[in-house]
Length: 248
Length: 248
DNA sequence: GCAAAAGTGTTGGCTCTACACCCATGG
DNA sequence: CCATGGGTGTAGAGCCAACACTTTTGC
Image (cartoon, rainbow over all chains, first blue to last red; front, side, top):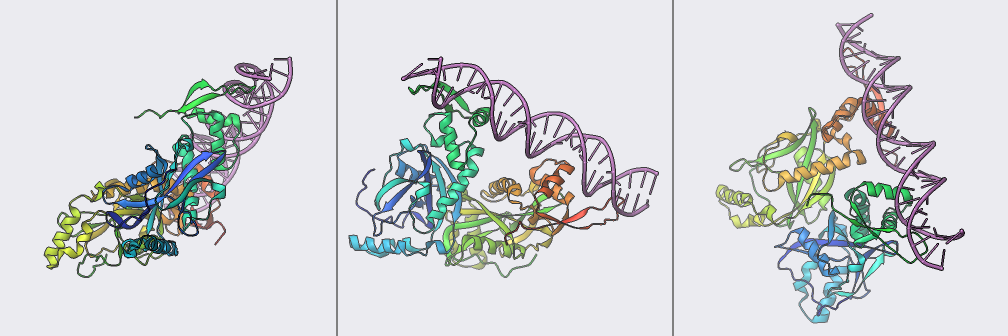
């Protein structure tokens, strides 16, 4: 993790007002899906999803990508827009107001400059899939820390952010098989067992080893590579790599 | 169709800026999906999707519902948020600028008051399913007319609105079977043939009559009602009605 | 009774699942 | 040569599509 410069809330100019982006960054480790969650350096140490705003000169996808790059250090990242959260009640919590007030106290600045942050926001939800081993989590200027949390043990987050994660998981379950995107959660080369365990984790159920292998290989999107000799007293498994179905 | 009062573009106050909603209203008639599309009363008679903005005191779902009510006269309407359109290029067309200029010319008002409409907009796409027979299309103040257009013969629309319809259709195809929502496009009571023809229209392929009937009835969501005597020299079909799977 | 369309039953093929079997690996 | 885990083959169940057969209706 890196330390950012002195904290400063973003300024109003240059952003679309009352529109935000929240990202659910999924990683996979130890047979658990993990979510990358920063903890704020304000009282209570509240957790929030990594998020941001949309600049006037970038598309919403670019905005999401920039947020994701900034938090993971990864350039090419798989992301999917899955839902917009626009209820009235979602922003009425006291937490943004507290943040703005505390910010003013700390820096002796005019709280009015960032008062726009306390307004109601409509937020576009994106989820991202990353190879957890390649991520170097980067905390932002307003974060105390940023860590991977297993889905089963997420901290309580501000506003509706826990609900956003739940919806992201639904979307992931809906997409994983149809869009063949699971590979984004694994290293470039992986064994069939690793892939199967990933599927079992996402869908929270067992897949018969032999049948899973056949089903996946029949898709024709995996290239078989060399064997992986683990030193264990058993047959060495093959490594596989994902190859795109023709079309560049 | 009704005539609104004298045309006036909406004013900035009270809305979230640079955020809009576009609705793809699907109806079904003559074995074709139709979309309700207004034509603007400005030069060229451009067509656009029914749309609107989000008031500060309403959720995005409420905003979409209000737009839909206003255009169809229907209170209870099935709608689904399916995608956000936020590319930079989408709003760069000249058409909104023309509308604002023409409005100023017509009413001798200060174009600056509605200049906010010429800015970049991020738009939330909703699709709605309605019983076409129950809809009384209502044109807005800036419309010349509003009509149902078969999907195969949509007019060219402004900005990316044709693309929005295409994405709405994809979403509908993805949802129709999974969510059992096709009934929203039909009258309350319908024959199995009508339902099958609807499916054939949406998916643009044939379904074997007998197998379709079995598959649908096995879902256990249809109530069989009285027979429908058409006067034709053949067996009278049953009418069916959709019943919600338990839970109120 | 005949044509037309609705409703029901039956057969065959395809797919998925469970499970058995063989193979490689290192001790 | 044995224990362990990976890869492949096979039989059975379940699902789905095609199609045949029966029933109903009005002339």
